[in-house]
Image 1 (cartoon, helix red, strand yellow):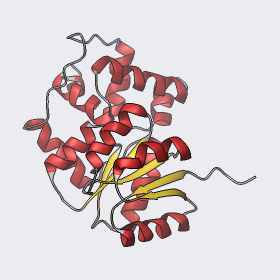
Image 2 (image 1 turned 90 degrees about the vertical axis):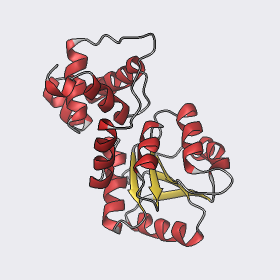
Image 3 (image 1 turned 180 degrees about the horizontal axis):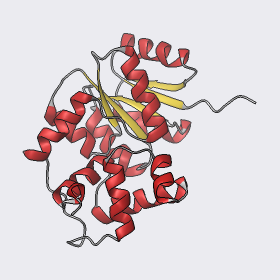
Length: 219
């Protein structure tokens, strides 16, 4: 019996880029189930193919990646999305992550970085390259929007604060589970509940909330 092969949808308006990505992914025994040249039919494709991951270009005609991401995360909040972009723009990166992207990779990255990002998003649910991490850290000190939980001030239990701090340390679900002696499934439940309580759609949103509320300082 063969091991499960993750399914991926490629969304990029450049045929050569899609072709290169497909070849690289298929060499790693990943299955590309669809290719699109813009985000306008992405929801329909996701409904049909039920992918594990969407590789989504930001700059596209008809419907760009950020607009597509917003719709996609509304309909499929748990679907993992890795953004691709030509531009090393802090504003673009920050916006993408706050809309719920699970990671961002620059198109001038080495193939091994892209493959590492795909693997990490599939296995752990997120990928922060050094450039993306620096962008987010810069934003934390300047321009990232304040996280305002629905209904006002949020109240977290001691266990929730512990799990939040571990998430902010980029621990995987299994690592967190081992640390707090719970099952990975229970940790995923905590993660979803934290996002709901805080009113965010991504791990980045949780990190921002944690920073704003002193969680990383033990507050």
